[in-house]
Length: 298
Image (tube, rainbow, N blue to C red):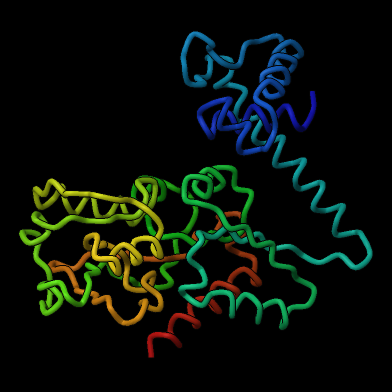
């Protein structure tokens, strides 16, 4: 039995499939299958029901999963303790983040933290939302910077600390008649060709929940990243739903941001691993992130 085999076992459960596990760990899917089969032979039990399309645990697999997670955690802790004994070792703080951190200025407090704490090293990993939320299941992180997502975070045992409140707004070209509006109502959104962020994003989820709550069947003509949406608005292809802070520097001042009424807030925060929350340095870093937002709000 190897660490890799246990890691494959747990990751398959977390991702839901052999294919996603291979992508997550950057290995061939055939290697995942072979190692799981080898683990099953050694344990003498079948871990997954292969009659299902998605990876589904057998009863035996369900009973062994908690011990597999515990064993991996112990191996990780052993490696961590041995690393601490090495000359010149720096304590590592793993920070996961969505590709939006620059919009909120969070690189500044992270850099300042490293300068003020030379024995610590920030291990920063930028991930798209599906990958980030998968990583949260593994507990192999200290802090994760993400928008609040009801589906992925509401039942988490980790702590969500709000850092910054953003809002979703309608971006229109200045020549659009709506550009003179003080706000946009749900009724007005029914007749607008819209560009939204990708379906897997928290922002898209908030928009779709808003549409459903107000009985709107949206006319979505395009999905993409914030800069692509703003480019489409600049080209007069339609209007975009995007957060105010993700709008960044508007191109050529040709785009107008209009608040939505009722407002549609988007909360960015730090998910703090429950195993890391008592670490005073983790608390210090989170407080520096909070202070950064307070400085920007003044």
